[in-house]
Image (cartoon, rainbow, N blue to C red; front, side, top):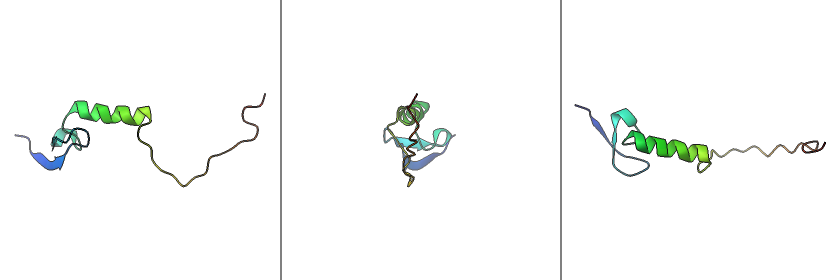
Length: 58
């Protein structure tokens, strides 16, 4: 018998399962991955954009 963790899935709010932590199922894990790949999530940085003056010139 699989033990459920007392946390809620970050996507749908159902109880998290050990196999898919921090999600409840493979579907929610894939939804989260899609959000990362689609740019819905971003990691903040303190770096300033690199503006190369020669960029875009032919």
